View 1: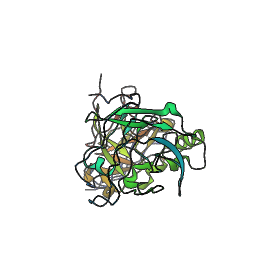
View 2: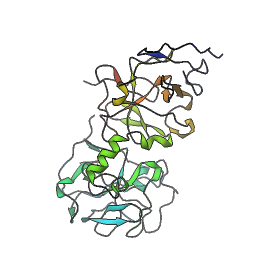
View 3: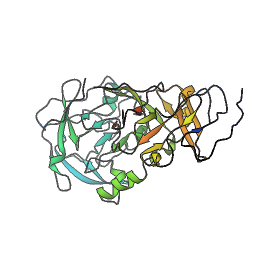
View 4: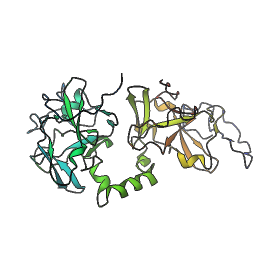
Length: 333
């Protein structure tokens, strides 16, 4: 049953928004703790997996030729020119090194286990050093769930890709939209192409939603808050207690959106770990469209600087990371 459009009174800080169907979420609508970074030290081989499965975008289930143990130490890390990307980090043999957007650097934590670690072997932490262009102070290690230690750079766990068989290969770049060649400062190599690290950071902060244009959403497991939703850039999404789901209302307008960016609608066929029927959209007072999850308008927070950050959670007791069910994530502590 369609609901007739009502007049929205100009100047209202909270705009009541109409929906095209009464079943919000059923169709498109308008209306403990992670381990700390540890010093580089001796460790045994890490990253052994159960097989070359494909839940992380690894491609074929078969182990490629030349992919024998890639979880050994990196030796001397070097800055190498990666075709199409610019400067990237390689190991002493010239094999490209990677980072995973679903990991976290602060605190350092690897979220690549099991089949994932077969396709993306974790680099052992021992005997690592650096050449010109990489700050030795950025080296560290993190303890994995199996007790082994994995190399980190600027807090980011470091991996090789099983399908890279020779120096200079970078077949893992962009796999699943979450794997990237590691840049000298710990950021993705392509992000820093042709720009200094400071300029890169400024550009990313000015355009926080740019990478979300492909419309992908993913449910991820946060060790403290449970199952949360991230956009294609890896940014945590939030809901606002001054919004409402039914009737659909928007409480974050004007200056509020300078800090809390309305998430763009997505193709519900491009979501992972979230029921498609919960995905919808709403028309905001300015005429733009915003993503909804279980009828709740969702936002990203400009205070989150790295993929997986949740610094906006419980902000002023009004903003909460949203779960895969559209609920508020629990408040810890």
